[in-house]
Image 1 (cartoon, rainbow, N blue to C red):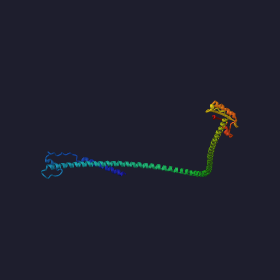
Image 2: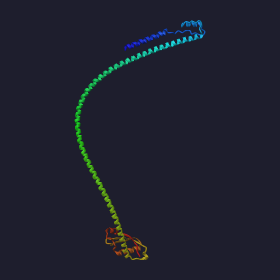
Image 3: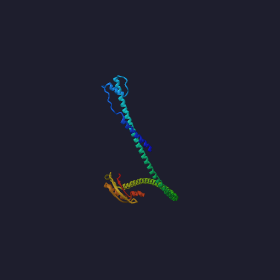
Image 4: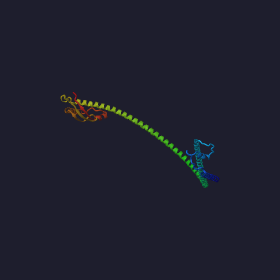
Length: 311
């Protein structure tokens, strides 16, 4: 590594020396440019430095062309020299940059080496600590294995107990479901019985209503029949007067005993003559036709009807 740096320094020194020599001995003097008024002798003297002139007389056009060629050649040489110097400077700068880069790389490598040493120390320390931890972990592992064995035994016992409890719970649940099913079955039967009883009761009620309706119609017929008989009885015992009674009526309220005996008679409205004659006829009869059916009699115990004399 030191040899590389020495070589770079030597090259840099040589390049700087070359640049100094070029600057000191290069062609930097300015020559008087030939003008159109210059004599042929002056031009010839100038050209003698380049090449010998064999002709005695020189064509002016060729002379100017030659002068331009010389000037261009010198300008090209100066440009080439300037380019060479720039290349040398560039190479020197590149070498310096390379040297700086190499130095930076060396510093980086040195830093990396130191870092690796520190990393190694830390790794060794970490390994030592890891070993200690591993030993401690091994002790803990053995202790945990022992605890695990004890826990497994306890878990096995707990599992056996849980299985027994689950079996007992399942048995109890099956019994509960069986009882629940039995309860639901009985409830369903009860609902069905209640529905049947309700339907039967409704049917009986309907039949009863129909019987009552028929009975009521029968009773009404009986009431109408006996009302007609009572009317006929009153008519038979009535003393009539067409001139005073024809077209007139009286509403009577009569109370009867079960035997038909008249216990009370009242005229509630109507013609007075008809009412007095009707009351006399009722009292004269004394007993009026009544039904032997208790229900019909109860309906006619206090009878009220309108009496119209017949002629």
